[in-house]
Length: 124
Image (cartoon, rainbow, N blue to C red; front, side, top):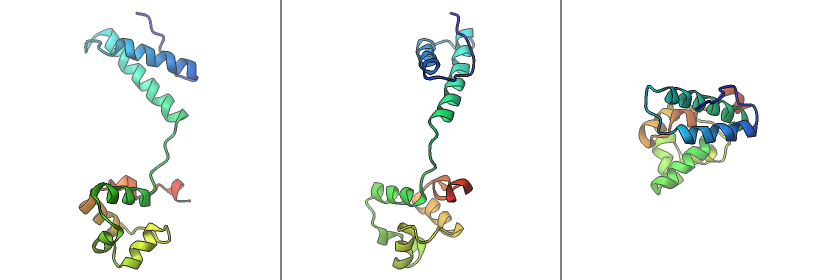
């Protein structure tokens, strides 16, 4: 099987690479086909990151999502974040999280730190 390996720069090349991955999906480890599969996966991942960038999650959205998952209400955050008014300020984007709050949310609710700490470019 001849598969041309090169950086993917168009939707057409992307679709072609996905079809090739589908054909090679069950290639035996250590085979030439498996090596091609691994490279194609890397090329597709690169194209997807460049073409479909994902925004970093909003810390408040991450907190609200976890509350919903656990059937909790904002008042349940008081032991982790402080007073009811502080919880309200945070959930309404009027106050940011401190490092200590991030640690508590991570430790107690298992919210990933990368979801709670915005990147500098995202904070602007």
